[in-house]
Length: 452
Ligand code: SF4
Image 1 (tube, rainbow, N blue to C red):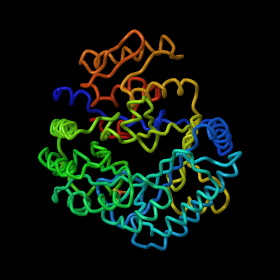
Image 2 (image 1 turned 90 degrees about the vertical axis):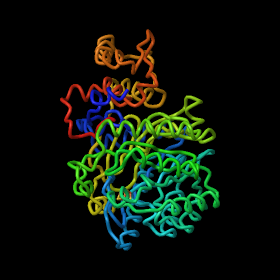
Image 3 (image 1 turned 180 degrees about the vertical axis):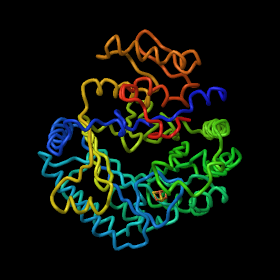
């Protein structure tokens, strides 16, 4: 399989949405059309499926040089309250759009570092949001925890507010790698905070492990996963470092390009990690995710209910996802919208009573058809031709997939296509064959990270 890596290792999207953000077409998108699409989606799905809420908490005390998130580095905690005030104000603006009381099925705190915020401020934020909403019968509240600053008080407050899932960013335990990415945290710290979360009552603890980091070797990946399997997190996100310094500015300049493992070495790290995780009892879930039997994602995959949105893989197939906070992305199923990225501009706009929209996209019926195929591929590694894809479009896609088929990555069948085990690593490349925007608008290779 290693010989296929140079051929397929090209820049490509991770498909947390279709169309992907760089290919959104802002024609016809406005505050008005966005609100209409939210209202429509709310009417269609709030009572039956509930809605998802993503809250972006963008502050971090120190910069990790592998980071691709929208964040502000500061040690000034005076930023917390004005930002929370703005989040609550933005929620009020959405409450005016909904026609009824929202039912929250899924709520996720991401960042940035959610645990940058004091526990009592997080409590205030959550109570301020949930005061105007009902919880779905089965809800899932989760957050991203930084092992270095997630305290017992954070875990307890979030548990008391209904959180049962936490994921900790681990990356790699080798100290030289940690120094290179400017994220030093020991195995003992991670073990302790994982233990604490479980003791308090969190039922799903996840660890994020990255391969392809500067100075990282296959031996480091093996050692990190060996330690990880001692703690046995319920879920593991094991994914490739996305090196895009031209998009992420100075944040990704803490090391030299020559410190990065090359394609074949990265491939070894992936294959080694994948077999170590399988040997430790983890099942592969979609792309880059692994879970123990019993975890919600594992159950969702087996029930054919796995879903993917801007938060990644999820077992809640809500139709409406509202993203609050600077740079957050919302998905109404009929349209996408992204908030302005500057924290000052975000706060100014919401405090003036305006939804802080930067850009968006209204989905066409053709987008909806392609999205269904890409979602099926990303969540189930197969798709069926049972929809309105025109014969011409289907033929074009099949022609684009001739090489992956010849290389044994997919099997094209009369009623659809199936991705083989060998093809799992190249799932992004396979989805790219369906991506009409990418093919029609002359792909800009600098917009995406490498697919392998
Ligand atoms: S990796 Fe997390 S903690 Fe580090 S800078 Fe990025 S958002 Fe902040």
